[in-house]
Image (cartoon, rainbow, N blue to C red):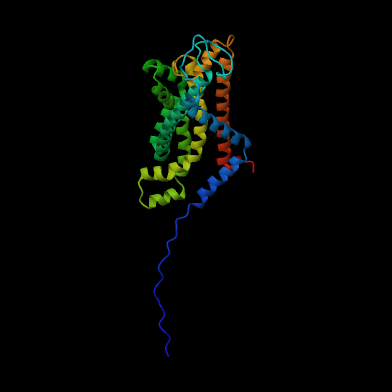
Length: 304
């Protein structure tokens, strides 16, 4: 007897799900592990979450409107019904503090987003282009660096007017220079890597290589710089408000509250104390989180 013929057909291929690149997944997993053991960074993250929740939901939950006046009451210290006291116009300081925090954080985040958008694109194009184009674009950055950006923002505000929207656009327009240099340096080190050469061999265009393969690999430094830019922008906004060129009444910001508190600190010290504490704690938390992210995303600076 002859053996039955064997089935020589190749079995259907079983689809294998795509795997997340192990290197990238491991990088972010290790970064999160290093960040969690950094107690100062974790505490800063909790502080920022509490501040964010307070300034977002606080103005609606506060028992008083931030611009509601009670001239008959005047300025009183912390008491029942006004936990942080009131100002000379009888406005509740807690409500103004929460509203001012919302404005200050909005300016900080918006200006940082503008600076990141300009800086990442400018630095990415400069580093990827190389040659004379890179040299010319960096000389423009050097020239702008020579200008005192605080004075430059003040000139813009005086020339174009004290508009709230223009405020964070003007600040963001002068904060992108450092980001451009950081991204350019990263792109210069990445553009000759093997995965970029492979993308070129596959026939991908220069713009697609830059956007899809190079810029995503600069995400770590961008995140770190963003967390360190927000407090710097908030400090600049506070400086402008202190000079009378920032947020204008009846709108409130932490810088404006500090300015008003300084003017009356001898008679009503709580008007300076509470905004200063909120502002300083937020700046410290942002800087601590930025330092923690820097250590977490750079294994060479980690302590484990």
